[in-house]
Image (tube, rainbow, N blue to C red; front, top):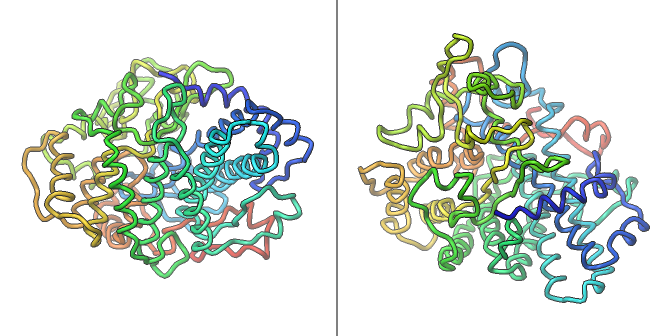
Length: 500
């Protein structure tokens, strides 16, 4: 298993951090960039540094998508935890650290991409390989689009910056209309799709292929096609399901990916970079500074690790599985036992609430919470198939029997379910996705994109909120507030999102 991206980016971390720490739109001095990007190897390291900004992406999904949704109860055992305001739809979360880090980490990644693209235009001739130079530009644009798409889904309107700026210039940039940010995202992903390689060498696993770009672009078209909810959020009410399904068909038709017959094998520590993986984020344990992940233990209570004689991983308490998710699994569904842990005993105290166990290999618990070795799959082949089914249900070319029913039944069969389903509807497909992608951070975005978030969340709060009092759901809560730190610096140029 090769994880060169994070090994190389780790060596570069201290060089890059000084140029992009904290504030999203930090300037970078000409002497620093010209000196750094002096040869082909410098540009390669710059590419890896841009990839390193993906490191915290899984944590953002679990904290802001999974926790926001009807999959979890965000309660704590003593003290107020940062996730409670996320799950409770509190209006006063502009200063929440999860919200702030989503903004800052994405813009730090964008900053690195902008510098790399700018330096490729100025000094790229030192690479002496036009194909390689174009690939590097395509990777930078893929990543820039990735970070901006995450910002759109989280905050709606955000400042659009496509080049390195000085601090004074950055303070003059207001929030840009969602449609204009999407224009850059789509342009970047089209360039990436045209110029990234079909096959990534084994020594470069984790770098994007053209199919990763096509999959991301398909999801962008689908998200834009979702309802607007009369807010300035990720949905524009467009009918781009056909554009999305054409891209998904290219991924399927490439025959470079496969539907694994075993659900646990997809996430097996010894089976990384398997046929399901269209794009993932690579991690490695044992490095100094740490290049491992934190997401495997993020939703697991420390008392569970103590019950096995392991060291604490996050210092946090349980985020229980909601009753509606737990009870939605049919008898015999093998994904339930694999994804969810029910009960354990620590110091004679029994914990009866359930929590996610999906990413844990209890034989590989690290001595530090930041040192898990398993990769995070951003886009997998099963997702491609089910996203196509979603497009077909919205009227894109395809067959209900072949592209929807057959796909869902293929997924169900792998999960050990023998009763086939027919004439599947969009709500039923979203229910199937809920179980298939539990703990993968997609639930909130699925609900928003499908137009079901208002009805599902309102019903869930009324019927299933047995743990604590959640504020009434409002459509404004589909996106998060602009971080208060940004509001303080940029007022009156920034206006806070409605509802916060």
